[in-house]
Image (cartoon, rainbow, N blue to C red; front, side):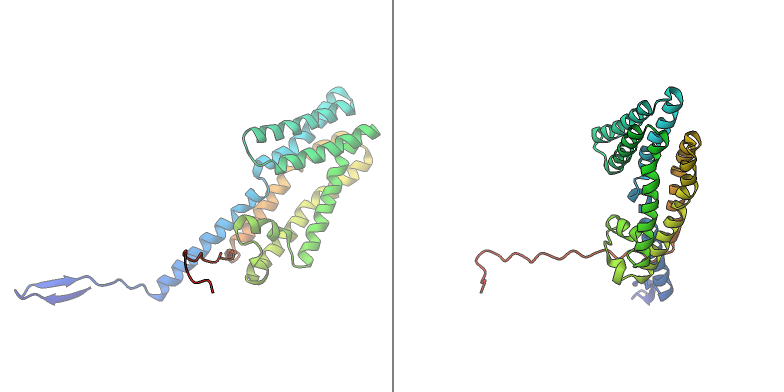
Length: 254
């Protein structure tokens, strides 16, 4: 703001452009990056189906063990769990929601129910899930070792960065590797605890612990991932190839 004298001798004020110093620029950029990192971190729950997705995959196991304790029949318990999984899919379809996690739950329950009814052993209902947990941890560990962390692969499509973290954002690649290892460690707790129980044929203890270890470890893994991504560099959005501009009619195409 500058001051000048008018012909009558009275001072007049003239507003000038407010200039922002480098400190303000740096603070604004830091705030922008922090907001972008938080937005990206908040996509963790969305990518894994949220609480609803975890419930869809956990409740059938609870229904199985409750029904088995009431009826003492493997087939009745298996059909009850499978029926609940089917209801979850129908409910999501009716609401036009994503059925990815509900369908994965039905698939796992169907295999477990089929094996349990074939062998007549209630503990076999949980065998596919235990094997899935082991395979899950192995695949995640391998992806981290080869620097293609699955957490980055899964979240890239949600955040819009796709695979820019692979070559353009080394800090984010390191964060995804760290988060993937966190999932290996946390989710690896389940098979370490449950597999020995499977071989003891203690169906009740196996079933109740399977339910108890369903949601809490996933929530913990999501929280740890959220904390890691909160401190990571913000994602670099993937740039789609621009389509060539259309030439006006009658333009020279030579």
